[in-house]
Image (cartoon, rainbow, N blue to C red):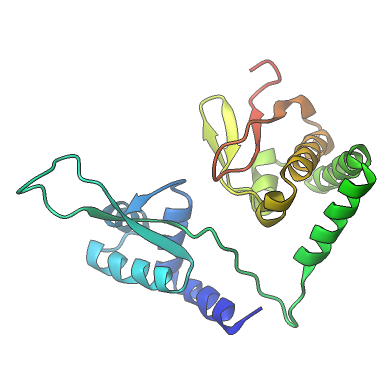
Amino acid sequence: MSDDDLDALGLLHDPVRRSLYEAVAGGGGEVGRQEAAEAAGVSRTLAGHHLDKLVEAGLLESGFRPQERKGPGSGRPAKVYRRAAGERSVSLPPRDYGTLASVLAGVVDALGAEEQAEHAARQAGERLGRRGGGRPVEEVLRERGYEPYAEGAVLRMRNCPFHVLSREQPLLVCSMNLALCQGLLDGLGDDPGRARLDPRPGECCVALSKTNED
């Protein structure tokens, strides 16, 4: 954990900044100042000030949305915001679980133990599900950092809790993530067949259908 991590996360103690961050992160893409301001219930000017502070801290990234109209009178491109790709973590004293996870993933790959790893992930998911107390799977996934959202008959997840590791071992991590989600459904007394691999850029590789037949 660095001082920058503490400073960045400290910004989110402000309720306005936290609301704006959640509005952008929950938008699933690029969010304009006006849209973020309306979600947080503040003025566009105030939203712009706080959003730019979040960009400076590395929690958000900014860019400009191309204007549909070109030439004189088209106005300036609209500034938009999206969640930053980097990760922030805080623990006292600092701990490095990511390196150990990377080593273990490498061992699984070297030993060809993918099947055993998927089995262990499913068992871990089942334990999480049993501790879920019969709550909807969306609530449990949200607590685990998946950021689920509904899209028609599909429940998708905006965030992959294992994003850093998935860049090193995508096939292994995605298969274990699927097994974990299937185990979670099973532990909740739900149909594990609802979970399937359906990767999208910038989102979790797993999606859940409303029923196994969807």
